[in-house]
Length: 322
Ligand SMILES: [Mg+2]
Image 1 (cartoon, rainbow, N blue to C red):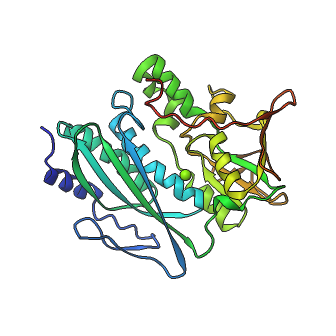
Image 2 (cartoon, rainbow, N blue to C red; image 1 turned 90 degrees about the vertical axis):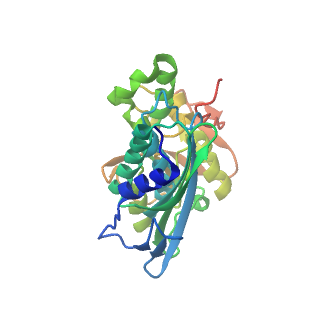
Image 3 (cartoon, helix red, strand yellow; image 1 turned 90 degrees about the horizontal axis):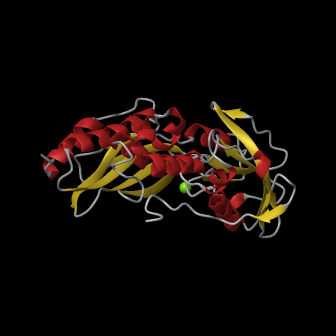
């Protein structure tokens, strides 16, 4: 039997608990159960807000993604956006619409995945809303974060001559999507595909770069390197050259998946030429992949030394090809 709205709110409230993280710099004075959440930020900080939809059939499929993976990925998107600013995530808000027949087991699994990731990053689930959906699960997650005043790392700061870097390895999510299409959900168990089902937002890396003022511009790789690089180039009014041989592909992924596949939730950033960027930040490897150019062109230097146009091939989500 499905949850009633009342039971769903009670379940969320019970599971979210009154989680107050003792070392969190922002105090949650009121959360779930009041008309608004009340947060007290330390003085001289800027507030970060990001919202992301997660829609069944677009961002996940029930036959491919376990409920805890769907819940995890739902929050990971917002945490990754906060990471891309160099911010510290503080609180999350979940608006959840479920079809009438959704099993409590699915709902509990979804909440479990979302809240486990929230605890890992000391993020309080501080409010939201529930409703009935006529078709499919629709979740909207807002994440709040903060940075010391004036220190947010934006997309618009890249300068010609800066070097371009990415964290981790790319293409795992696109490779997993392809495997799911061919082999179905049994791939979910394999270690190779774990980063698609349970991506780790690079919050520690983003905040390291912000604290040391190392990055001139930054973005998280949600749409794919070719598309997200375009976002940085457009906002910064610059061009870019990426060296194919330097792009770190995930095990099993090819260059096309690394360049154009979305949802890897790694960070792409620019740093001035002289900046000393460690090869490993917070346990995550960082790779120089190219440089920022004057002008508007975005280029790929292929293995044979040819300069090709780097066209953005955006993330097509799970609905594509159908
Ligand atoms: Mg983003």
